[in-house]
Length: 380
Image (cartoon, rainbow, N blue to C red; front, side, top):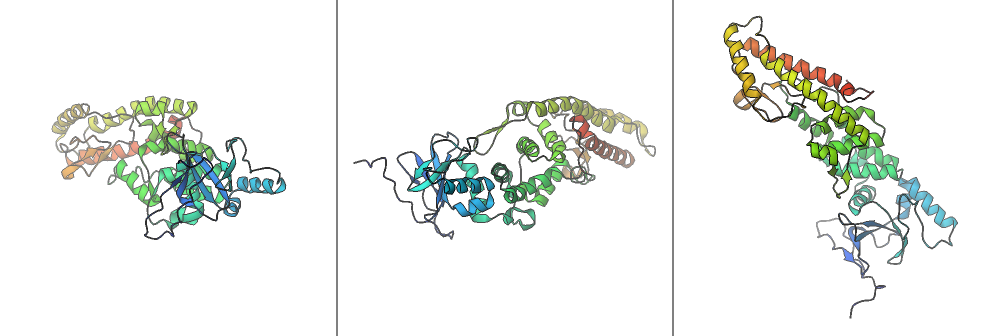
């Protein structure tokens, strides 16, 4: 005989976080699953979140009021209200934070929140397992995924858990407010190398698509110095993604505001023009004053320029520049274009073109805020 809808299967014993297998989740007849990791048998509050991506089923987290209240004034006010008005059956969060179907779950007061279970799990893990300090970059042992830090920062901001929000947001802000050096450092670094070096320095795992969410986090946390680099990285995304957005870890679509989308569209036109000028001046410039084979370098420069225009790449990459470290030691252009652009040139012409390319990349960095219609400039 099937159990009645009031019957709840007891949760499995909580793991002691050793090498023993994780407990399996327990699912009730109502379609609400007890989280296998964040279900404490002696907890005194249950948070119920929709499960992603369908959000039809739900996940229950049984945790402790005291820790939530200490970290979040929003939860603290909620619990104080419940004490002051014991006639209320269950505590209730504001409408913009929770649904209205709060109830008892497994004999414990329960609150249904609107965040996905994936993001709520990131938030609660930071409070009840890893701790706030482990999120800070100075205590980093391994790189943290951008999606995890972004979810913690966003929820902590919403619930006014300021210490947690600051710790989670630190690495993201650090990455996007870098000075020009990591990106246009010298001829020994490509743009891709600069990205990898900066991610290592910030102990952050980040994909190019994450730039769109970084823009929205910069707006949320009022950090305008993040915007030039974050919006630039959006400009070189696929046009479909730029207009329609990219999915977060839980499937929620992350999109730019209309204003920021407009900034990117206007900047892309400017950057296309500047990218073309950058390549043209690097490859088609006059030979160096000390060139020992002027006629030959001029003719070969024209041939190399014709070769480059045949490669499929976006001229919006304004930090595209000559680099000494091509395959087999040959110079190449970053962002996937790898013709032997300068191996035809004499040493004087090669150095002249590389230096010019780097100077143009530095100029592009300084002009980036104005191209993106931003009042604030990146730190230098």
